[in-house]
Image (cartoon, rainbow, N blue to C red):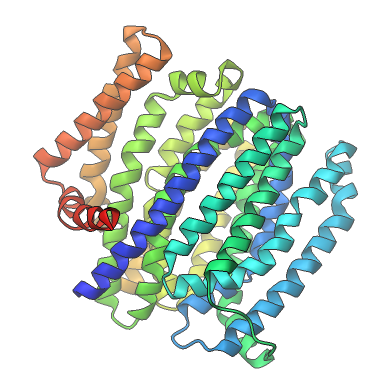
Length: 484
């Protein structure tokens, strides 16, 4: 890879990672404070509504955002056509949710959820304004804009959410927090970006984008429905509190994994798309993506799994202890998540959205069988089924990379196995600290020091490739940017 591309990637990664980490840090602090004030039942209600919002987000994007980034040549007519289509579609989707809200609330036997459905769904209308602007920023790799806009949204939503929670508004604190976050984020992004839509529209240009994006839409829609099907089932068959414990365990781990993964993948995707005809370069970048993501994510996931109980008791209080089991299960599942996302990213970058869709549908066909086998047993069984799902998915997705860029599953596992073993060993040593029977705060502090020390020392002794990459390439570039 030439030096110019390397600098572009490092620059993009710096801003994207800063954005994700900054926002997630604020979100984590806010979630902890809100979880101490609000009840699991409040969180469960919002989780049910979020399921339908996630589906609408996918319908709204239609894969157009990805198509705009992946397309070799994009003009103003492409952007403007996609923008006006997105605006109209967002209003249609919100109108549909507004009308459907009472019926959805009746399905869950809780009429009080009607205004909650209508309130949170306002985020979909706002996203119609943001989606194409976000694609333009991504294509031009102005990732610093995401940092500023996301940070502003997180700050404002924090103030409003915590303020309403302390004043006793209950579940509405969570509703306002979500709506204000996306609204401020969108406004700041528009303020920073120079792109504005022109009053022009072309069905021909839109069809070209939908042709590529449509396959991604089918894949994303089936994925989001499948992923949220668990929440729908738990919310209907079990209690709102059960759903809250399940989602809390998932969200805590997902937010950590996605911060790193999104930072790297969103930067590499436009670069790989520009090199899509050079499969050797795409393979090298996919390998670097998997190794780099795993080096960061694996130790965090392993550490969180081994230290879950004192950590939850310390930050969320004992009323959230039932989420410990879910937290551990999801940590194990997300430890190898970079394999899944990197392989899918490679398929999209080389323009094979058709194979991406087929692979995704195959994954979900296998995984739905696991869900059918577990959903009547218990919520815990559903979580274990999700763990098996992640293992099956990464194997199937790697076969796609083997076909497209010659990078198969066994080769990928060989690349990250030393990192996984070292992370597991560090996590086990952290777990042993529990037997000292110290106060939770002191236990967690010692665990962090022990785990970090073992992981970094082990990385240096074993001379892990990714450790050397961070030390020799990323660290100097990031230090230089911080000085600026």
